[in-house]
Amino acid sequence: MTHPPARRTVLLATGAAALLTACGDSGGGSSGEATAGGSPGRELAKTSDVPVGGGVILGDEQIVVTQPREGDFRAFSAICTHQRCPVANVEAGTINCTCHGSRFRITDGSVTSPPATRALPERKITVEGNSIRLA
View (tube, rainbow, N blue to C red):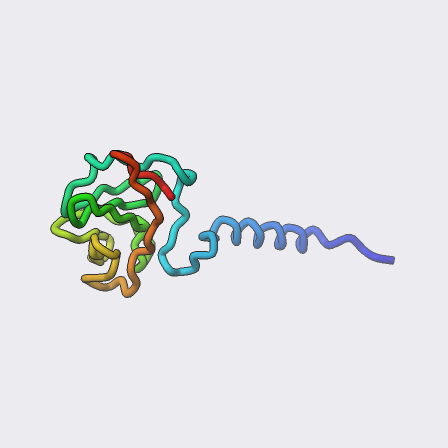
């Protein structure tokens, strides 16, 4: 004769599943990669919104779009790889996290100032006319 699982077993299994779901990051592990909001083809910004030598942070999408040189647009996760704080601003050629002082290059997301040791993950975008879209 089999016995149904005890109430405690069911509660523990349900709680563990909920915890894993809440803490999951779509396979990004601790790399600082976050799931970008929106779907492919969705417009993120207009090219005129992104200053040359700077960038814009799109908080809802957790993406930062930069324009290192005229007409050269790049996109990265807006979540710092150090302790997953959202980056705060883009100034003087770097994407800056003010939680602990990490800085990343607008050209490739690489670290220029620790404590972060990993680059910001790149996000795929396309530029169509004056529209920057998720790829």
